Length: 333
Image 1: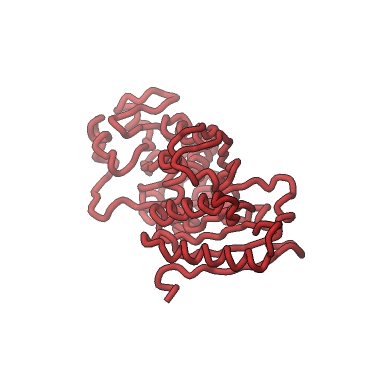
Image 2: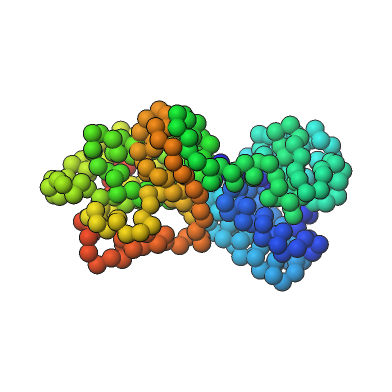
């Protein structure tokens, strides 16, 4: 689960070590959605300009990317009618009242002392947690997200709740989603492709115009050309029935089965630069509750870089069957 957080510009100063700044940026990359401050605000640019050379370069590089690709770097500005300012946070109740805007507030030292936040940990004010910049990784909400990123998926867990806990906000803040599962488009007893269809339902409901690429393989025991035509028809029918506008485009890239048999070709879903390795792939989503316990580990790639398994398929000299794009919404007319 992603955590919405607000960063007090005064929390960034020369007394903060580069390691602290790195922890904050890394926590943001893996588990955070920045809602405050606006990267264009002079206050944050002034603070960054006063940092030591190493921390300054890291922040300037990060801020430049956020300005260029706000959704990819999960910057979500506060509502236009919000007049929030850290200068108005004078007592615990003032922070607790911000629970509709963010879940974690990264505070400068003086304010943290005024709010009696213990060193080395965060402190809850209602549903909002206050924490010092250097201790962002000690915030309970970030720790919970970190635990979820490596926690096993247990049998009988509601798939809806699982989606909400682990994937929903990633879908909400991702422009690009990659589904890598050689079985995803197969219709073995109506299993795998129904899991893919349910995943598409979730994305259509919760994403905000994402682009989807599906890497998969037709059943090798069936006639290839017939199977490809069947897969395309089923995907077209499914996409045509979606109506929530969460999906902008869908592309299928089909390869022969043996291309997926290389070591490390685990099934996964990629939301921007966050990859979730899922043991049984899209079949996880087929039933109302989880039918098989499995690992579901999250890793983060270097920004906007192709993942090595998809790169191997795209750049390979053999085994490629076809690519096709499924019209979505108005593009279908």
